[in-house]
Image (tube, rainbow, N blue to C red):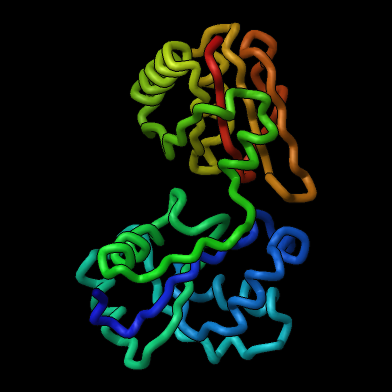
Length: 240
């Protein structure tokens, strides 16, 4: 049983694109935030801005106590943060974008909560991974998210070929992301490395005003036809 003052953990989704919270963040998230005052987050400044936009003055953002939980946070540091909570409280986790715990350091607190038999409550909201799969036309029965591929170009190409082999063998959609400034290089590598028959999906600016989702065989993609720039992009393919 838990010996901490945390009584429940809510997983609170964030918007994927700027100024889309009103359209894509459901009312249950807003109602939950109104009743919380302690939030774990990746970045305190952006989280306060998100809360302010979402609640529109119903609560002063200064009333929230924020603990930063990043990819560099250790278990010991997390425990030290938890020990600062002196009153029995329900808490929330907010990612910089999308859903907490998915490609996100918030899973550290979730794992701790389960070990302490503390209830974890996931709230609905936009997930770039699920939206990309939904809109891709690829296999939605079996898919894998692989995070970031290697930075080194030779290693990246090798990993792409390995994922393509797995995709074909298991009939499994493979998904991954890239640091935005390397998006166009990633697309070039996919066109160069993958078999012409492999179905490639590029999902750009999901939920945003410039959203674009394209799926077609690699053989029909041409280098430079889609300039991604630094826009948030989800890559996916299915070897057929």
